[in-house]
Image (cartoon, rainbow, N blue to C red; front, top):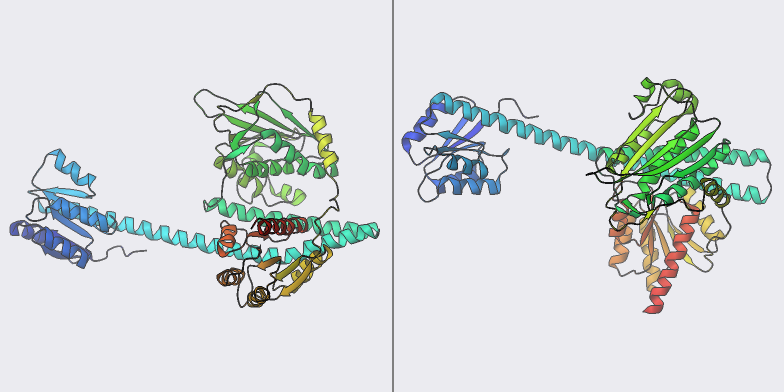
Length: 548
């Protein structure tokens, strides 16, 4: 924060010695440091030498007039750095209007009284001080946001890295236990570990999402997508959770409904999964229904409304008032009984606003709740509308989802003969990822830091047999993944490099690609996603080599 009464430097510019003396006499006081210039050229020189806080600038002067000097000042200094008060004997509106248009802060008419001179200069100094304080506060706020983002990115890394090992080994044990028909208690214990690990990852993702929204750094797409398909995908994702509580899921569509809208399908899914997840959490028996309709009003952009209707515990008016506040739930007893952080609805509300809509709720105790979210649909010109119900009823949709859910298939990519360099400093993750890759048939070499990975990559290049893929952890000792990848690319290494990163902040993917990586995987590593990406990358590389 700037001091309340700093010494202010004032440059008085006028070709009249009398005027300069009048202004000097009026402004002589302890907290002002006064300087003078007799023409526009001298004024320009002193402006750049002295960098005064206030310039009192005569309009009519020989060689360079006041407006020419003003334009030079505004081209080089912002108003909070240097405020200009034009001094003129021309009292017509054109001159005054031009002064403001070209960046003057104020003007003083000739002749002027001492009190008027003092008042206008004092006001200008106060304004400059306020602008400077505002800029300082803004800079401090930006620095604070950057620190928070760095902290969250580091926290994400520190939690996601061990979660890779926890969830990965749990999945391996679960697969092994199922194939060896282990006791039910053993399988149940593994399921509990996996479920709670998943809850922890949801919490981490919620905190990161809220932080990105608050920092105005969340990315929103605007692409063509199908509302009906989004609903079907969401129901498929939450079906298992509903079945576990014996709840029925239904989808209903009110026609006409556009085949396509222009929005962000990922964020819409995120909102709906959260809303339906809450409905499942707070409903013990009955049905949860997801309704979809088109809203059109004259003079307004069309919207699609999704409404989640449950038969749960409902809420009072006072409980509803807390819903969209961060880390708040309906009441403390709800938190104790049902768990949760209270972040989900806050994120949903802000995402809906970013999508051009809003979230509303209606609820009564013991009567269930209705959460409606609207999103802008974009222009529907040229977009076909579904006018009638399709042959697929909401029950058919549910049965379709049930048939698509279940245990993962064993049709995973075969990596037999593929040579992979795993650059990872964590011993647990080294063992886990190596195990998964070797089980899929790959030949795996391990580098415990970026420097070892860099040297191994060079040796493979010099030997004329590149690795089929390098899996490059980003945060490693000696050389991090960015540096190791960059150095390999500088030396001409052309083989595929896939980043492994526990960071999940905006721009992390771009940083990996910019460093020279072909793609990236986010920790905790999903086994199927990793194997698929390696297989696709190797197939793509072979296609490129064949064509060349």
